[in-house]
Length: 331
Image (tube, rainbow, N blue to C red; front, side, top):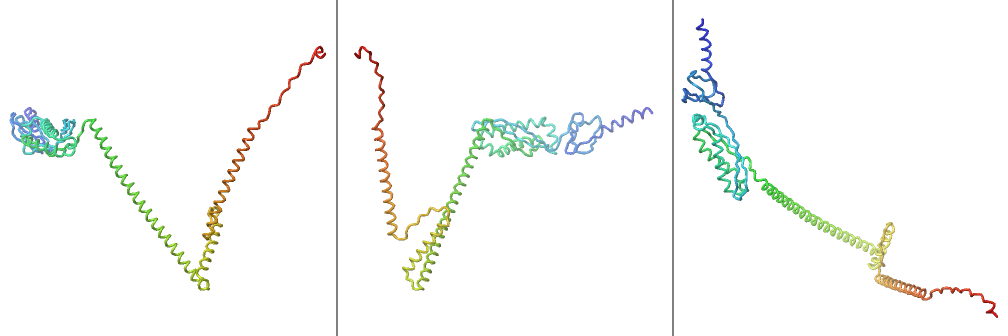
């Protein structure tokens, strides 16, 4: 009975140490007395209790390592590059990944520093931004060649950030702002130029249509006058009398339209050249007479002012009272 009491717990303990579980996308390295025996994949696995030991486990999933490298460009600008490397353990090379390399992150970081500090000094700052993919490819090629030997596969390498010195960034921002203002001014100038051209075209078209309208109006007036002359000729009125009658009719029509307007400053000229000349002569004579009257009025005013100045009023003399005469003096 005592035997079974000791044997059963011991059996359960041995059974417990016999089985072990390896998680999905993982690998376990089994050693026997400190020596490598096998690599176990995911699932329920067996080992000899006490004799075999799980030395370690490796993840087969993709891992990412971010490294910030500070270096100097060809044009002497200090810049920080953030390089992201995605890598994983090759399933068939778990032994190499576990035994050949103690810390893969440090090894990858060293390769990244070496490649970036070799490639970036060949480029000026602007080219670093343009050729960041080329830098990433160069980093991946260098790391892939070295890490494959250790059982690691480089999936992807990216330059995720380029951070120049603060003073350089400020200068770049000013340059970019100036370029944007220049482009905006250019577009604004183009828009103004297009607006001026279109406005000139519209004005030219308006004047063309206005001239065409005036020409059509005069053409219709001429046709109307021609028809009026034909009608008057039909009632035995010759062309000269018809023209005079039409002019008189237009004259009275104009007087009627002027009379109907409340604020009109229209001056009607006579309809004969002789009357116009007489009116002009009368206006000139009126202006001349007005000037002469003005000159006479100025002379009269000047003479009046001169006369007033010459005849100043005299001050009245004040007589002092004579002293009274003494009686002795009088005698």
